[in-house]
Length: 70
Image (tube, rainbow, N blue to C red; front, side, top):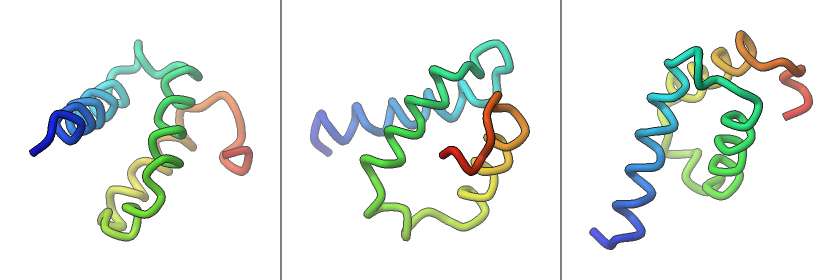
């Protein structure tokens, strides 16, 4: 595994952990996650549907702006 792959895995792990911490769920966190998702669109087909739905629900329940804006 390359250093970039390790860094990407660590970043994703930390972002997912931050989503479970209400004190870290800020618009800035959602913006970073949105950027990571946009950067990895080609990988979305390999993500289990349940995981995508979890993120969508987390966004819908927590973000201070409408889901459609994403």
